[in-house]
Amino acid sequence: MSTQLGFYIIPGRCVQCQACKVACKNTNDVELGPQWRKVVENWSGAYPKPRNITMSYSCMHCEKPVCVSTCPVKAITKRASDGIVVVDQKTCIGCRSCEKACPFGAPQFGTSGKMQKCNLCLSQLGEGKQPACVATCPAEALGFGSTDELKKLAAKGAIRLPGSTEPAFFIVPANMGAKPEEYVETFFRKV
Image (cartoon, rainbow, N blue to C red):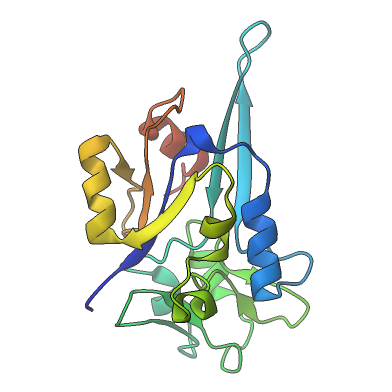
């Protein structure tokens, strides 16, 4: 594989506007119900010091995606050119083995019964554009690039989401009010 593309988030910039979710649904014509991108918040503490932390995430386009290896009909593949994990809806039989295997809840199922998920906006990338969620974020909390580029963020304190699937997802600690490790523990405990 020549390149592995992935996402990063700067959670302290996220204003919970949900624009990334809306842009994803609109760009990819995603029906109501399935969520290719999720914005999740966690409230803790009590008055007078409540605390809210937010995470926006989608498919992690893992370097070792377990969804690929568990699909009995090989409907899910990892593109060699850029590491994007894609699903062939015509081949998918809707068995949901990918859903059970994915530690991030990326596989989604709509009225067709076939698996669907983030594809990093392949149509946008093909036109030299950013994924819709990244391009739309008014706070510039989301970004994407090659993992080689994203690893450079580690010098600024960013961490790569840990896990045996090697997710291509980084958390950047700018104005967060919490350490990156706390985000991992809060939103990705089962990884």
